Length: 195
Image 1: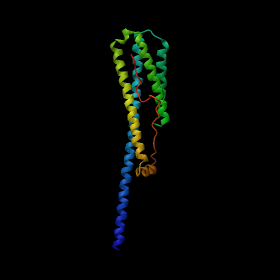
Image 2 (image 1 turned 30 degrees about the vertical axis):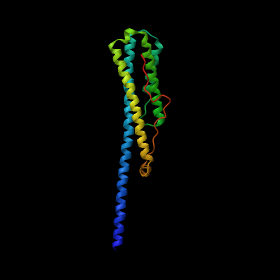
Image 3 (image 1 turned 180 degrees about the vertical axis):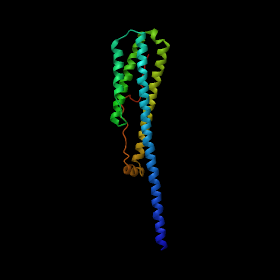
Image 4 (image 1 turned 135 degrees about the vertical axis):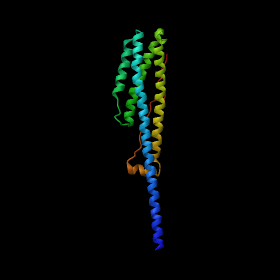
């Protein structure tokens, strides 16, 4: 009789320990998944900052210089295209690449606009232009850091989803590895703004 009771305690203890491990693993996966979402929101936040900043730069340049119309039009078109791309909550690698591509096109167009300002020394010296230039440079750095943090969060999440014993919990509750993005050569660097 004592052996049956003792066996019952052991089985009960094992069930409790497994239950605790299940809860801890599940909560850990949820936190890491939320971290991935948070980091993606940070990337989006910095992209929005760029979208908001570019029209101000265009206005200052437009008001202070006469230059190639096509340069301004390419910046405006790149901004419109970048604004059209939306994840809708989806952070798949395909959507991430689409958004990143549109944002990189915008950064390139803004870079070409700022390079064209070289021809207009009176504009380069204005306080408004200098302030916007500094903000754009800071935004590009923030985007770079946000992308790195996003990829770090993806790596941490995927490590947990693929590691034992968390892999079992991930399989039970539908946590699947996520793909970050496969960057193109040089995509890990901020877009260089030259003056």
